[in-house]
Image (tube, rainbow, N blue to C red):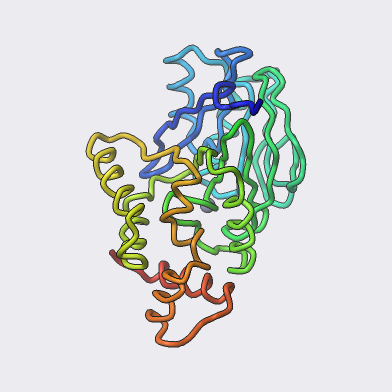
Length: 269
Ligand SMILES: [Zn+2]
């Protein structure tokens, strides 16, 4: 009988800065203990911990950008002598990192009863990691709802490969990314695939959620595969739109993806 891992873990999104989320992760083993993912801001985390009487168990980091790591040191300095492991990419400078990872490992948050596979997803940064377990993916700035991260350090080929890896996880996976970019990403997706019905449906849902100030995340991966142009760069409709935008024939999937990413960089919608 297949096991539904959803019940083992619960997530909640703490809004931070303009459009970031710090993800709070709880397991069934001890519901007071939490892990946080990418705590760019310590204040929002401390407020949530105090409000819910949660205990900070561990910190997971996807990459080195300040809006993902900025709160680590303040969180640790308020807990001297406590064992709060900080998991993060080995090849990047991560304040307070105690467990250096490069992808391919499994991490056990034993006090939460949770286990995550560590996936190397270079592109946005070279050391970028994603954490996957219990039907949940923490994708940082690699996979967004209806979009993907900018190529600050890696190549388009690396990002395409990274998205292929994440996109091939089970469709029931709930995707937890770090930014609320969904509405603007969908505006770009509408230009790429104006006739995509899944995109139309998602847009209506997102507008409704945002009008209420509710996060558009997490989102199921199966849905993302239906409208996220960056998971769909091999679809004839996406390729045709990219070719029309570039004004020339492009057949190589990597070049289609690279052109799509550049198009989004320049898009003002
Ligand atoms: Zn980033």
